[in-house]
Length: 355
Image 1 (tube, rainbow, N blue to C red):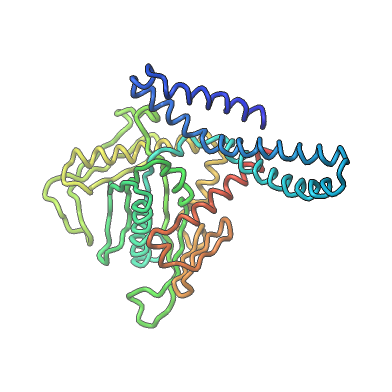
Image 2 (image 1 turned 90 degrees about the horizontal axis):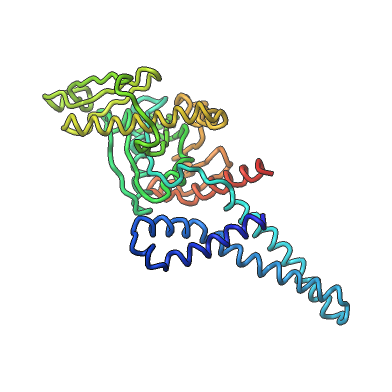
């Protein structure tokens, strides 16, 4: 670990000098590239500075104890040494987590797909609640939201919604939301006050650029049709809605959110690229593919990553066994605490696998 940190420190110092070099400053693209790399190393360098001081303090205490010249001073040094070693262990763990290989998709924007699962209209209504939750979280993070496609129900719920969230580190924060979300509550349409259980499936995909995935136009079947609203009524007299089928994989994407056929086609292609990227990455990484199957599943009640219990005012994430009794705030976008806990658990598991 020390050797790796020394290498990073050397590079960090080089970058610090480069960022003040007039030739680099005059090249905006190059300067931004170095600035990003410098920023990526900043946190680990701060911790490394504290770590080196801690090692120096430990060595100082050990030197006092070894000399044995002053018994009282040696006792104090012994007490300090125990505390310093404990801090060293905690700091080493933090640094090791930061040194774990980064997910290359972490800094990408995300495309979120929400689909109603088991539970009929109630599942659709809760799907709309989840979309609002993610939108409110994005607002808190000062990220941008853009609706790509939506298929609504008569009651104001959603059968399927696809939207993009753009912002620094969006995928790194939201990737843990992929999976089946279960809600337990009394539906508005329930006259006898019985609690119903419904499910909503969420898939979080990194936005894909042209360089990330190549699509052969010959592999596509593109259909145009009239867009329809809730209940199936036509909301547009022209064939502006687009359905794109990727023949080799069977992946189908539909988009009817815009009145313009061109814009719907662009949005559909954007989602198709993300799904294809995720599909091919899943094939290449068997571990990732297994995780995806477990998380996204089919929308059945038995498969869940999180439960939202309205009567008890709680939300429970079953992957890490975490329960928060602040359901209203959580559904209003205050999901940062849960996301941080999931990231921490993920890093701990990866660190364990590294060892």
